[in-house]
Length: 368
Image (tube, rainbow, N blue to C red; front, side, top):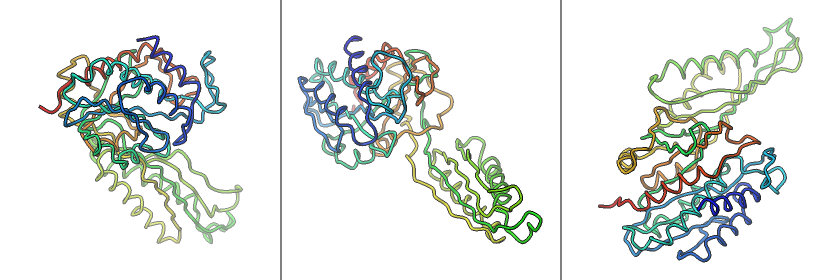
């Protein structure tokens, strides 16, 4: 099993592709499934869905993302990316290898299961988001999918450890860009201008105070800015400032509250003559693990670690959980190498733990 899963991972690692255009990756997965007793389809471009029909009324699903990142690889491995400037730096090659190995395992026992099994290979997780169009493709209705599970390799957990959490797991995340327009004036006559830089500084502190003081400390959320750009020369009042940051939350009401306060806190400065333009994308929803399903899974496997805190990064697996109850897991690689790093790597042996967990889940009866 290890040799096969290693081959899958390393083959896929060499052909990374971006976003929703993954012809080589799709062809590889289709070929790897060709001899197995499953029906293979492609509900959206570059996707692959494998259906193991046990003749049951309902199905459970397992999902892997497929896309890579625009990163130049620096691992020095013999199986490094053959596509310049593109790399599987987030472990999606490992996720696909796990699901392909699960397909091989399922082929030996799927007819005995209390449900059918659907394997979803999804493009575009990093950007622009492939889970939502997969949900809209009708596969949940077509295959009567009632539960869904997924994994992400996690460098900060010990090798082979499987972890999850009830409810809040990974955050809803939106990019926030704010342009503030003022009026230029010589610094010696600054009162004749409208200082966009000064306004941006005060406004930024207003936002941070709001995020800290107006919401319960028990509410998981984040509003942070990493860029403030303003001004041209030292002795001229800036007529423009730009803030770029991120808004993250789990509950929709928390997200909407902070978003609305962005606009409200700008009003004071608009009354002083400044102009504000906001560009806030919708981002992915929050990954919210179904609490009852987590309990059910953990009762089957007490070795699963329950994390105390959620992660503030995002994942489009969240769209599937808005269709049916689902659980997302982390699989520890123990490397400490950050996701998206140009030297990201892991020992394929950890993938065996993920496959074993998938097999256990596939055999559970969720519909008694």
